[in-house]
Length: 532
Ligand code: F6P
Image (tube, rainbow, N blue to C red):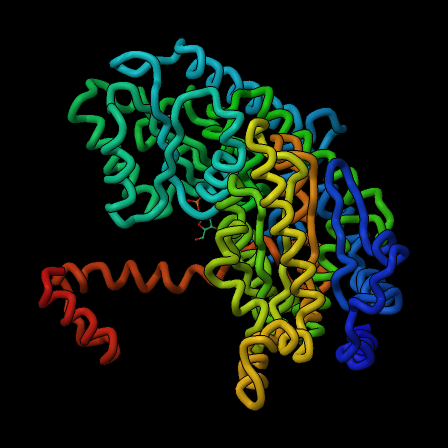
């Protein structure tokens, strides 16, 4: 089917998709689920191409593999693990069995413990040495940071708990900036780490412990831990009562639905957190039951495969016209690039096609005044993905929200339509003439025919955010299956960690730099000569 898709590409690559865009196409190349509407009419995908993409799903057994994931089979074959973050939002679903055991009683019991702890903090029953908790600091990195940090920002209109901060970087500037704004006597530190071995997180956790020790008699009493490693949280000194565990079948970048979401739950309250889970669950049901042509994660994946592996567009820009989603591009970078950034297929053979794309972005309208120039007139095509709500949360400023929406819609229209040389010339014919007119007009031409999709929804509520995140998770799953990738391991991060550990004594001046390459040795020498 890959060959058929390549043939499709040759057939359509010079076609202007705008010419296909009548009302029938607008209806046909859109789909809805829950509160979401996905428009992919502004792409060069036509009915034949879509049929070929769906045939690729059949050829790669997406439906069977989807069933294998939801039923708890060990689809993460390189680590021998099931992939069941969906169980964390299976609020009223049936049993989920892993190795013959229904995991749902434990999942629901942990959720109940988290709710009780979150309520104790929010209602002032759990206190620091100096009184009710005013600040919560989540210390974690990667999946133990990006999910809750993104969601806390996304749902800021729903905050009614203590302030939430996130520390991830081992750069001391990160933790120093946060702790400077907190009172140790009224701060709760949450150490979020699936493994409880990640060097950045453990270093920051010890720094926070020392900071608290200076003013608090029992610092460990103001620590909680989110981890799969109960032995290590105990060794750190955190009482089991404030340890919220999960299992290895929850991948780090898929973990915000369970204990790793504790900071979000404290910020918005357990009821809103449950609404977030329900949003994810709605998308799970949709993903498992909708036909391909109505299935949002499947369509999103097909658009992704078409643009990246078939058309050869190496990146995709995620452009939320929703300022509270300012951390979504960073979150999706980990979700998509750590999941599908692999060079070999499940069988260990080199991939026949490129791995997943570079994902990047910033909220609109900010990006319009920064990098959109390249998206509109650069020599490479960058497929764009817009997200936009019908309403913001600032009712008195709705006119400003309307301006935001107009900008979002205008961008996808401009990317599609472009501007011809004739049109450009006509706009400036009163200012220039002759060769200068032609030269000036050339700078004002937009090639157009640049694809975009738009995901729209009523308002960024907890329920809607849950749908959005589960939608992208399942897109990654489908793209991974089609490419033959194991989306649930991340061996590519290991080499750098090993070399950093080996380099630490070198940068500290305790070991010789002699066995390092010349470039690394001279970098160390330069930094040491300037105070490293
Ligand atoms: O190094 C990559 C990674 O393992 C991510 O996959 C993970 O989200 C992050 O580090 C943090 O890991 P942990 O939660 O175990 O500290």
